[in-house]
Length: 140
Image 1 (cartoon, one colour):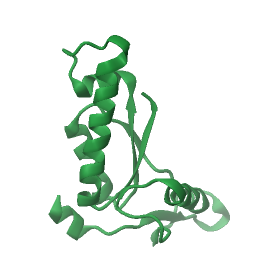
Image 2 (cartoon, rainbow, N blue to C red; image 1 turned 135 degrees about the vertical axis):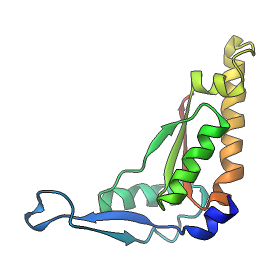
Image 3 (spheres, rainbow, N blue to C red; image 1 turned 30 degrees about the vertical axis):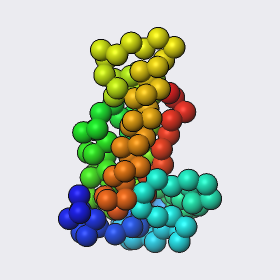
Image 4 (cartoon, rainbow, N blue to C red; image 1 turned 90 degrees about the vertical axis):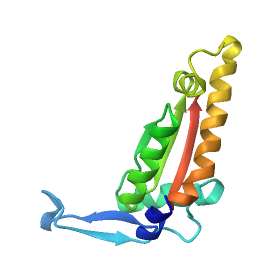
C-alpha cells in the first residue's frame, strides 16, 4: 500500500467530448479535486464538495458493495491505480458475511458488528492507499 500511495496522487478524470458533443470522448484530462477532499474517509462538507465536483465534471464515482477485507483492499487499490475516489458500501447481508456467517445474527447483531468492523477497516487503510472514500452504510 505505501508504494501505491507514492505512485498515485489525488485527482479525478473528466472527459472532453468530441466536436458536436456526440461520439466518444476525444481526450481525457485531469481535473483537480476540491481542496476540502482528502485521502481517507470523506465526510461533511468535503463529501458534498466531492459529489458536486463529480456532477459538475460529468463523471461517476464507482460504488462497490464489499463483503470482505480483501474486497475492500481490492477496491482501494483499484481506486488508487485509477486516481479515483470510490464509494464503499455495506449491506446487511454483506455485513453479516464480513463478520462471519457462523455468528448468530439475532437482532442483526452480526450484521451490525460486521458493518462496524468493515467501516473501521476502510477508515484504517483508505489514507494509506491515498484515495478519498465515501462510506455508504445506508443499506445495512
